[in-house]
Length: 381
Image (tube, rainbow, N blue to C red):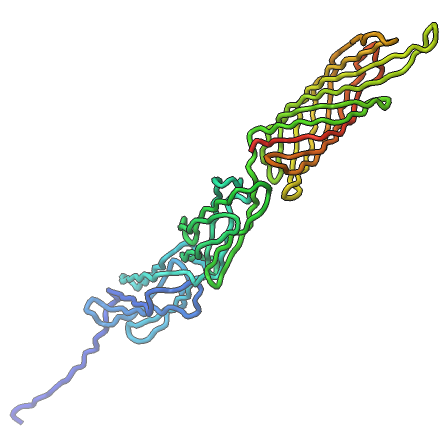
């Protein structure tokens, strides 16, 4: 045998190197809060030569929940990501995959679900209804998970005023201005907004304007000690302000009361007729409360303290009245009902005025009075 040819075949098994690069692709570009279908993230790993590389990738995400890695084949993996219910203000989620020195990222846009809740609330529940005062209303739109939704409500409506168009002031927040028409008595108005099929309403308390100072005057009958009857005339200036749903006032008033009486006293030649008068001029500083009890009726109460000049005049036998006077402390309390009439209110008032014994020789006891008066009040609005 002149020669021997031996052929040897050798098979070389090539093994891929470690992962040097990674790529991630998503089956959709956007996910909705709380959606039931998961987002599928496909991952491929390759070595430096571009061959499919082995190695289980690790994935992390800022929000939501990632399932475990699922192997599909050499260098091919899959993750399933579940969208969160609450976005907490996020508009995207970043998914990061790492396998050895290789890494890749993919961004997924996030959006809330469709509108499911609509609310409307005022900055203040009460507004002065003078035709110029305004109050801001805020409508909030959110999905079923509480995430704000940027869809403005339709043009709002109001029965007792005008509402401006909604303007966005934040995620899912829309502000609008409400201006009520003038009213003369306290009332309510309802404002409504809609984002079909959703709707929301809110009620506002309308207050008539109050002038800086109101003035009142009254005239009536007074009952004094011993059944003495007389007249009472009074006037008061009061600064009224809204305090919650009530009106509160601070006033300065003056009142004049005249009580008369006649009788006889024993004399040397028999009974001697005499006549007497008690006159008081009182100055008070008082606090007041007032509230509407209907479209035209208002109730009022007040209490105050001050000082009074008490003058006693006594004359006997038809002679002139001899005066005697002194100053004493005074206190008063009143309750009244007023009926809207013209620019103000006609009122009926009952009042008790307490005065101590002034210590005058011609007057015994305290000249306190109970009075009933008719009057008129201008509130200055």
